[in-house]
Amino acid sequence: MSACALVKIGVVRLADARITIQRRWPEVPGIRVCRFGDCAGQPCIPACPVEAITNRDGYVLIDRDACTGCGACLEACPYQAIRLDDGERAFKCDFCGGQPACVPECVTLALTVRAGKGAGP
Image (cartoon, rainbow, N blue to C red; front, side, top):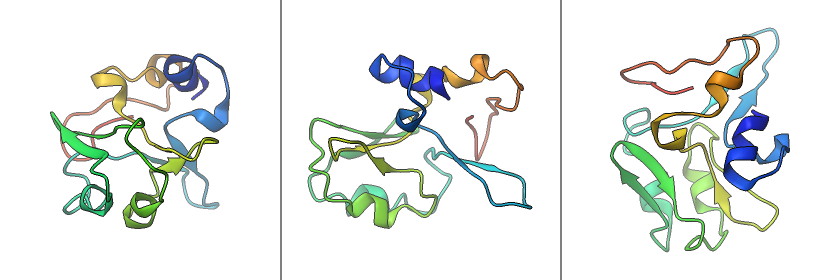
């Protein structure tokens, strides 16, 4: 996940990774990401009052320059895949345009890219 932060903001800092690992012991840890079609209606898109969240080519993307940090998208996201950074702007995994940086860097080979619903790392 550090590869994600390095690609996105140029530093190796786990807190800035776009994917979120949810550990719910004793269940298997889950990875929180979203992609168009994963949740009904993508409620984060209409929740954003400044239209900073869009669906482009099947990816739900956040325009961080337009984001005001109101947090409406966080409340709307059923996957808890959206977070606010230190500057109070929303961010989430964007699948690095279809070639997620995290996948080849995962030393345990736990991340893969799959086709179909739920696709992604």
